[in-house]
Amino acid sequence: MSAVTHGQEHAHHDDHAHHPSGITRWLFTTNHKDIGTLYLWFSLTMFFMGGVMALLIRAELFQPGLQFVNPEFFNSLTTVHGLVMVFGAIMPAWVGFANWLIPMQIGAADMAFPRMNNWSFWLVVPAAILLVASFFVPGGAAASGWTLYPPLIIQQGISIDMTILAVHILGASSIMGSINIITTILNLRAPGMTLMKMPLFVWTWLITAYLLIAVMPVLAGSVTMLLTDRHFGTSFFNAAGGGDPTMFMHIFWFFGHPEVYIMILPAFGVISAIIPAFARKPLFGYASMVYATASIAILSFIVWGHHMFTVGMPAAGQLFFMYATMLIAVPTGVKVFNWIATMWQGSMTFETPMLFSIGFICLFTIGGFSGLVLAVTPVDITIHNTYYVVAHFHYVLVSGALFSLFAGAYFWLPKFTGKMYNESLGKLHFWLSVIGFNIAFFPQHFLGLAGMPRRIPDYALQFAEWNMWSSIGAFIFGFSQLLFLYNVIECIRSNRKAADNPWEGADTLEWTHLPSPAPYHSFETAPVVK
Amino acid sequence: MADRHEPTPEQKRRALVSAIVLAVTVVAIYVAYMLKFAR
Image 1 (cartoon, each protein chain N blue to C red):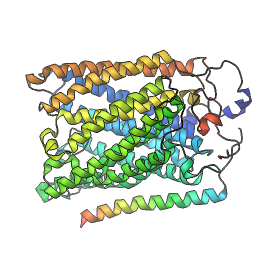
Image 2: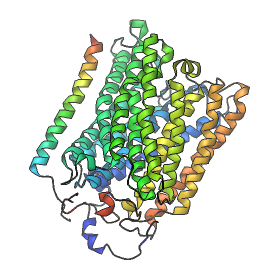
Image 3: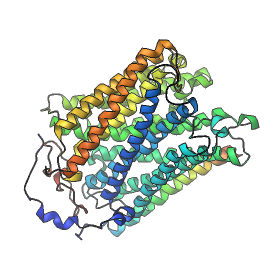
Image 4: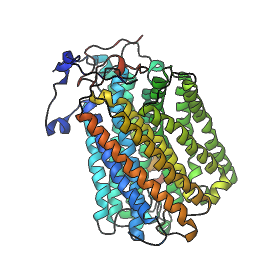
């Protein structure tokens, strides 16, 4: 159903396109679209860096024995891969979409604090450099896993200080971004745009931003305490000085579990925009979607203990965290039901954004179910720190967050660039991603259930076959992402001009009130929403 | 450069108040955590 135009029908919008040029445009920009673009390119760069680390890990695990890397470097790879993908790729990508879309979807001219928006982005870059550069300092990069658990994190070299500084900077950036997003949504909506008329993507980001405000200071506090344990003689988490390493795990996961929802709630917003557009039906159960999103966010604060059943806690605590975790399946189930009900009897077509959205629903649901398995305390104690856990969170974060990022990228590329992407290439990207992803990660369920521990460079012979398949799948998945990069660049350079609204069913303000590409400054007058 | 509609003074004032409240919340959570464990 995509529509392509070849004329000059938007010549009257040319006056919108005047903007600063050269490097200063990008260094000093306060324009939400420019900053969104910076975030998106930055996150794509970090995605490929984290991807190279993942492929090094899978190359090492292709067969038993040590092939390419030593065990210390392997541990650094798993650690920095996690940190880069979480803080460098997925989160900045969502902030990029937020910057591009939130002002356009609520009818605002820009974010509430454009200069702070510029700071938010340019803080992320030195933090990423610190993270990646830590590979090249004596002792190598952090090797404690992305969770930064003491006592190992207290004992390692200068790379830990670089990592702690990077996390502090990224936290400050996220907090500034969240303040900007909340103030924009609450104060700059167009006349008539009540809260319950906002697109779901705006709603999910409003709730995500509140989550960030609540948990980022907690992470900052915990890594500050790590820093003082390392250099200022305190013993918050250092057992040798009377501290409690388990306390760090509680604090970290009080941040860490909401962090998972920070990465996945905006995905729910994107899928809630795409499914109705390609099913040509309004979203089923809009209000219940909003309440389900809020419920998931609230529940995310009371389930952190399920990450640490094995450290020891009272049976009452285990029961509480087990049942609280299972409770999250209820609002998540509401969402999946609503997406399916939206598609029910719709006039569906299956362009690339819709394919990635359906892939998201199927595969994210598998990740949700394996999460339910892990929520059962005795089961979790058995398979804790095995590859079952690795399989679970990759189904949530790759086929969940990443697939929805691709869905969103293909969906809004016509609005961002004014050009249509290559549909055949997009579909090839989808199918190779789905096939490669499942070959890579589904066997990891079997490996985990058979007892293979995570974060090891070598393993027993009994795990060899599924590891080989997992590595083959990882390389298929990894190299298929180059298709996405090519498709985006080819789209930008092509002459396939996109219509203002190339998707029949898309009805939010950026499609109905703005041309493609969206002008440098949106909305000469505030749109009135009825 | 093309015109765009700017936030009204009232919107700007409310945005500033919202931002200050949120920033204070962040600092309060951070300080509360540190004080709890620093004792």
